Amino acid sequence: MTVTATHEGPVRPTKSAAEVAADATQRDIRNCWLLCAPALIVLLCAASGPLAIMLMYSFLKAGDYGGVLWTFSTEGWFSVFVQRDIFDETLSLADAHVSIFWRSLKLSILTTLLALCLGFPTAYFIAMRPLQTRNLWLFLITIPFWTNLLIRTFAIMEMIRNHGIINSLLKSIGVIDEPIQMLFTDFSVMLGMTYVYLPLMVLPIYASMEKFDFRLVEAGYDLYASRFRVLRRIIIPLVKPGIIAGSILVFVPSLGAYVTPRVLGGGKRMMLGNLIELQFGQGRNWPLGAALSITLLVIVMAALLIYVRSVQRRDGGHG
Amino acid sequence: MAELGMSSAVTRRAFSVRKMTGFTAVAIVCFIMLYAPLLPLVAYSFNSGSSIALWEGFSWRWYEAAWRNELVQDAAFRSLFVATLASTFATALATMAALGTTRTRAYRGLTAIYAMINQPLMVPEIVTAVALLIVFAVIKTATNYHGLVYLITAHTAFCIPFAYLPIRARLEGMDISLETAAADLYATPWKTFRRVTLPLLWPGILAGAMLAFVISLDDVVITEFVKSPGQDTLPTYMLGQLRRVITPEINAISTVLLTVSAVMVTFFFFLNRKKM
Image (cartoon, rainbow over all chains, first blue to last red; front, side):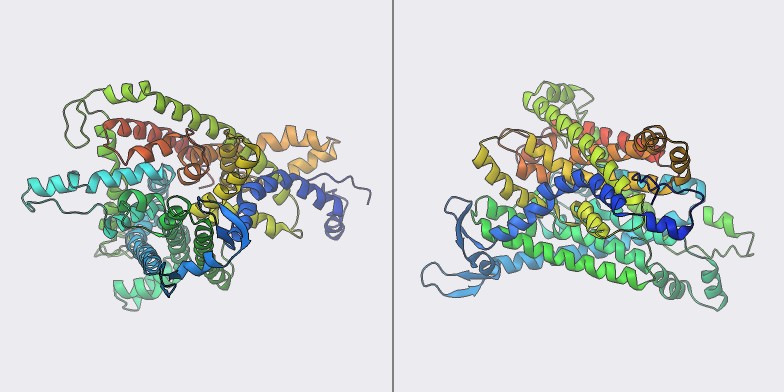
């Protein structure tokens, strides 16, 4: 152990590989932890730690004017799915919550499917471009992804308003007399989320297509497969990791969407995110809000776990 | 059209192996769909009338109005201030963390570190926002301090993974033998870092800082829940305005924000060109 350890763990040419490995000493590892520490502390204070505290809050009693009373209670979790009648204390299923859960799931799944239908051909299209222009197409997908989500939602709102562009256009060519009510419906929320999260579908599918070996497709055609069969039996199975990754990447933020349903759903078409906000605002039921948040988190984590599993099964492709 | 050119040499009937019927059409629709809604948004920011549906001629009127609006000014300065500080902090922390996670072989706890760094990417924003609301509410009542520190801390935290990823990618692509050579020539660790590692890492750091800046500038949800009254940033100001009668002023602000994001991402694209 004569080597002075730096954080890089210097490698002396005279040392054998085994010795070098052995030199990754306690001290090296401690340096690594020290380097990571500031970031971890900030994350602990403003990301992981608050989640733990929220878990605790979900087991407390709601205060009258927001906040909590420091007594243990399972009321918060209880009221996620069950409601108590104010007058006779009878219990019944919390219809409002169930319908919001259902809408969130339904809209997220529909959004994912729609994004897949649009995103898969687009990724394919990009992967088929010659190398020189491919990055440009990819860049065109990336730009909207990095621009403000609120602004893009606002743009969609402008398009589908009653006096918006689509309705004016349809009216001027005489297809409709009265504007179609598109804004503030489930449809508008789904459309908005698809628009906003579409790049998240295209990028991973493209990534798995990029390395695709087209001789396999040629072989398929040589064996008299139709285009559809080639697509179904050769291309889709091989880019499946990308499809799964894209679907998860769209599904997860859709399920937790807050801005899009708030702007395009107009208060009536609430999703989970809005229901959670409600508990911290007018609802003044922080424990219920905390319990709902954790429920959402658990669903998201389950989806992510499925994704990780499916990636690992396929000889550990990169995340 | 391009796919015809590529395969016509191979088969007589120009049967393209790569072509899929209808895919190109869907892709074109997709690209149009991504950009079409933004065009009227930008166009109406130059409207001389006060409608966002009726075009009355070109003017800079709404940009001037936004510029003179004290609320907008305030929000814009706050946005820039928070984004600048948060992205700087996040980049510094992410650079250290990237150095601490790439230059050695795997050690115990590495997975936990990855999980923590990537947490803001995995947990839905609304969940983090609400959790922060709870914690900061306690701190706010306890200390009676309502300043911008809460916003900056929250932004720093969720910017860390965005800064970390490009920096780590850059580090992993770097040849470690240069640093080893420096160390062999009796450079101190600090000197090796300053004279060898840092210059090589610089593009990654810059890219990370830009992404962090854009992410912080655009954030709505966490800001909305963490801010104290009167601490609107541009996005939360806009979110509030969307409930009222919308004038092209909002379009003007949107256009400016869109431009800033697009310019920064373009820079990022060229910085990391080889990586993508």
